[in-house]
Structures are given as C-alpha cells and as structure tokens.
Length: 233
Image 1 (cartoon, helix red, strand yellow):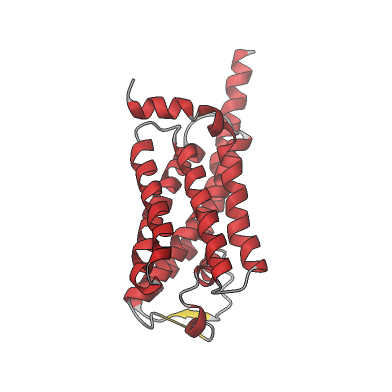
Image 2 (image 1 turned 180 degrees about the vertical axis):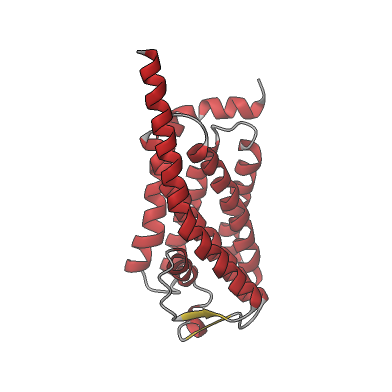
C-alpha cells in the first residue's frame, strides 16, 4: 500500500462530511464575508485568507477519495496555503501574483476532483448534489482569480468606476465573476482587451450550459439506479 493510499485511508472518516463542509466554507467566503467586512481592510484580508485556507484543506480531504490525484492536489494546496500566509511578511505588491497563481492552480485541481465525483458513475446522493453546487461555486472562484491576475498582467484590461480603489480586492473579482457566470451582466465592470473578453465569454457559456448538463447527468444516474433496483427485485 502506497503512502498516499495510507493517508487517504486515514482521512476516510473526515471525507464523509468534507463535501458538505466545503460547501459551507464556500458559501461563507463568497456570500457572507463580503457583506460584513470592510473592503481592503486587514480584517477582511485575514478572514478571507483563513477561509480560503480552510477551503483548500476541505477540498484536499474531498480529493483523498482519488488516491492518484490526492498527492499533487494536497501538495499544491499546502503550497498555496504557505504562500498565502507567508505573504503577510512581505509587501503585498511583491507577493500578490504568486499568491493568486498558486491558489488558482490548487482550486482548479480540486475542482477537477470534485467534477469526477459529480459526473462519475454511481447513485444520486446528497454528497453528489452538494458536489454539483460546490463545483459551480469553485468555477466562479477560478474565474475570479483569473480576472484578478489578468488585471495585474494587463493594465486597463477592465474598466469600472470602482476598480480604481478595489482592483486589488479579491471580493471585487468574485463579484464580477459570479455576475458573469450567472449572465446577470450589470455592466459596472467591463472587459476591454481581447483576453478579458474571451474569459468572460467562456464563463458566460459555462454558466449557461453547466446547470443543464448537471441536471441531465443527475436524472440519467437516477434513472439508471432505478432500473438496476427494478432488475434486482
């Protein structure tokens, strides 16, 4: 038995509730914390970093169900957490890019592992349904990190009245990402360069297709489970 498999076996009791816990952390981070904290404050950054660390840890435990994917996901999750907290010791301008890059890669790998759980074979369970919601929110976070990085690498990639003060605030990009993912499109933040427009177009397309694909997959799994139960009886 490999070392990774031994760790995965030890995390098995935690894995049973990890998807629900991950969903709770995501909801608090995306929808609750921005409502109660002051933008660009140290308290807001501290709470966001703490919650993001918990999200990465919960995602790592969720991914432990996949022994082959667990080592790289756990490694990148720990690297992202260490980089995020070590950045408190250095000026934000020097560490922001690597903070967001490592987080983006770690969240993307966790999303892939959650996607396998959601769309893979098996019965429709509460864990699978929670995973479908988790995956949707994680996609919003992935695009939020991508938008933030693009705004760093390509100045003036986006235009908006609030960006002059809040362009470094992750909550600003989370807001823009979910507005785009849900295709609400308020127009207060606009993509100007081709790269930004391509990212927003892709997120809008996924936002349209994902609910239909997930619903179709859950219905097909439910019907397949019902047919198998009927055949057994």
